[in-house]
Amino acid sequence: DGGITQSPKYLFRKEGQNVTLSCEQNLNHDAMYWYRQDPGQGLRLIYYSQIVNDFQKGDIAEGYSVSREKKESFPLTVTSAQKNPTAFYLCASSMSGRLETQYFGPGTRLLVL
Amino acid sequence: QQQVKQSPQSLIVQKGGISIINCAYENTAFDYFPWYQQFPGKGPALLIAIRPDVSEKKEGRFTISFNKSAKQFSLHIMDSQPGDSATYFCAAINAGGTSYGKLTFGQGTILTVHP
Image 1 (tube, one colour):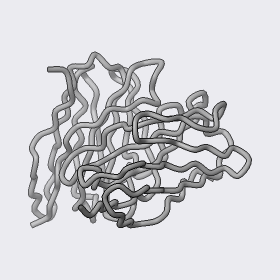
Image 2: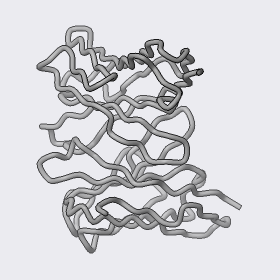
Image 3: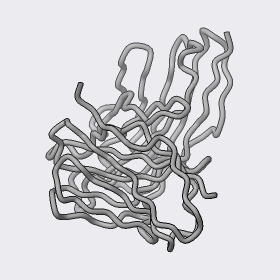
């Protein structure tokens, strides 16, 4: 089955802790994205990557970091600098040349203890 | 300039009725307008999309109407069913610009269809 997987489904973070959210795709897509979803605010872009070893900040990159060492993987680290991390995090991917058509994973819900 | 404003925030319709969700944008460089459907606890799924060279696109019970001069577009769900109950997001992108790949989303509409 082709698709996007995110893990874990739920993640709990303690104060001052860094946590990493996993995103893997087997769609052979070049571009990958991380969005944050809060109630009533739609989806906001955190980071995106159009090719391996390259990524750009989105609208709300502060307190987050990413890496893109493999085409299939785009992990997101929520650092201790992100003061309000509780949200639903969504990973997406799209084909090169069709970046406007983005496919989303099932999401990870991050909660602060 | 980059905002997409979506209304209403929530919508309740009866089974068989028509659901209408509206979006307005400011950036005239946007040239691709998708709609996403999201069920609770799941990721959004692409439902239907339109480019500004057409005024309407229909796929089954779902229709997008596009008014380029007013910078508005809307989703119509005909014969609404309880299974359509979900959150709907409009979005916009400048597919040919330097920010290619960056979707701007509306705030979302929670649709409830009563049986």
